Every structure is written in structure tokens, then in C-alpha cells.
Length: 446
Image 1: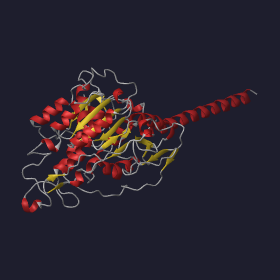
Image 2: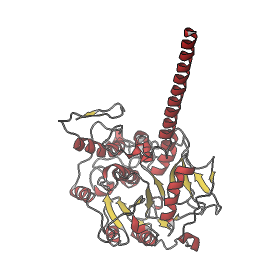
Image 3: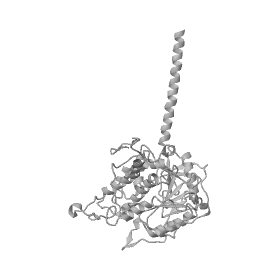
Image 4: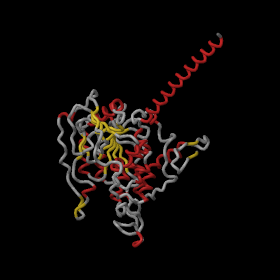
């Protein structure tokens, strides 16, 4: 009888152990799923750039020597925002806005005018990222009074370097020069064309901007919410900010596969379905917002981004970065656009007999009454475009990005602000070891 009771007790204990082990295992599995989803990872993503598991891609930096203008602009990047006296506090859970620009002042003025009419714009920080220094563009930004605004300048923009890399260096190969015949320096792209500073500046600016905004800039490097990115030829509707706030909340609730939110369809010429549904589709390049979780995933693919032979940052993302995530990458948007591309002047229009492409951008979209108010409803269901066109995995790229120096500078951008954080955030007395995920290049010990 005692033996039977003991056996019964052992069976009960074993059953409890199996049950407990199963619950622990299920809990761990749930946590793993949570961490791997783009929305559920947000809490884990709140670690700043000084913490562990930051990938450094270069053992040491190979940044080109700076000239006086480059150094001065880099200094300006640390200045506080303008208009703090007019707008002393940012709203809780605000979505910061980054406007990245080159040198189209007519377009820039139109975008700024459209932003001035956006509901809620005074609650947030507007960051204007410049690819170079252009006085007329600078004056437009300094004239903004409707919100806090901060200017940042790409300190290694090719437009700042007249006679040295990343501009044109003496002895650089041009067009389809053969280095063996002309003794020039440079590596051609897959089509036999050598680098053009005007072309490569597109990708360099976007990538530097992302690294500086997320990991270097004091106002944003601990920001845990979404950041909205727009360009100087994106006309922003009055309801854009309120709509992107709603979408960023609904993304976490209704679309676990959505990495971002968008103000407009991925097809820049499409105005939307005008239906009563939320739309999940491929991420577009007009008015897109994502959080630090997604940035960490993008940053971890710096090698793929920097090595892909295409000068377009967005095509690089579609062709190699997003596919490398292992699951489909969707973005959530409304059925009607809240931003629109305008104008005809861009990189692809080039020049006509040395005269730059010019138009005043007056063909801006018509704003209707529904564009002035929130027109997204939380109760709407999500319609997902399963199969979409456009650039996909396997596309080999348009070229323009074949020079090893550009690849190295690109990787430097991915590491430079983390290296600075490590060097300033650790002391020899603590002997704290900062573990960096091994990419075959470095481990930092302080």
C-alpha cells in the first residue's frame, strides 16, 4: 500500500513537472514569436546605441579627411532645434518628421507651405536633412515658425568635396575609362560605368541620415516611437500627421506583418482605392514611418545595402534588404493618400545642354475637404495585396554603385556613431565588455 501511494505520488509529481515544463516552453515560444514580429519587439528595441548586440561593420573607420565646410556643418548637427521658445514642449507620443532634401528651393517652399497647414504639426519636431549646403534652402528652413525645427547636414556629402573623395578626386576614372589604359583609379559598376558623385550622393545621403537620426542625434537616438520620412517633392495633406498617428497604432493591433506605415500607395501615381478598408502592401517611398525595431533590422543588413550595385536607396531596399528579412514586408496605409509626389525635376531629368531641369512645382495636387480631416477609421479591416509588382528579390540593380570606396564609406556610416557611443560610454575602470555580434571584424573591450 505504501509502495502504491509512493508510485501514485511520483506519477502526480511527474505530471506536474511535465505540465510546468510545457507551460514554460509555450511561454518561451510566445516570447520568441513576440520578439520576431516587427511590432511586438518595440519594448526590446528601447535600448540605445550604447547597449549590446549592435553590429559594427568596420574594424576601424576609413572616413575621408574633412575640409572646413564639412567640419562646420558637422558641428551644426549638434545645435539645438530652432523655435523652442515658440513651442517649448513636444506632445507625448509624438511622431517626429524627417524631411530630406537636396537643392530644389521652389519645391522646398511648396513642401514647407503644405506642412504649415498640417494638423498637429506644432506638436512635433521637424528635422530637415540636407545633402550639401545651399544658402537658399537654408533660408527657407530658418523661416519656419510653425514647429520646432532642426537642420542637419550630411558631413561627407560628395557635394561638399570639390577635389577629393567622396567628390571627384584627381586621377579618378570617368565614364567608361579603362584603368589599365589610362592608369586612373576606381572600380566600375556592373555595366562598366565609373562612379559619379552626383549619382552616389543619393544613396549616401539617405544612409547617413538614417544612421545619424536613429543612432547619433541627441534628440532622436532614444526615441522609441515612429519617425516619418518625407522628401522635398512630397506634398503633405492637412490630415497627414493625424492619419499617420492612427496608422502607427493600428499597425500593432491589426497587421503583425506590417513593418511600417505609409501616407500614400507604393504606386506614386495612384490616389488610393477610396474604399472602407485599411491597405497592407509593399512599403512605398512617399511618407513612410517606422520605429527603432525596424531600423535595427535594416541596420543589421548594412552589408547587403552597401554592396548592392544600385545608386537608388529605395530599389536597394526592395531588391536585397527587405527580401533578406525572411518574411514578407508590408506597410499599412489608408485607402486614400495623405501625401503626393509632385513636380518633374529630379535626378533622372538631368540637364539640357548644361541647363538644369527647372519647373516651379505649381502642379500640386488638389486638396479636397476629406483631405483636411482624419479619414481613417480604426474599425476597418485590413485588405492585403499578396502579390505585387515592382522591384523584387533577384533584380540585379541599375548600377552606379560599383566603387569600393563608396562601399567602405557606406559601412563607415553604419558603424561610426556606435563606435563613438562605445568609446564615450565605457570606462577603463569598469572593464566592462561590450559584446558586439560577431561579423568577423571586431569585438570592443573597454
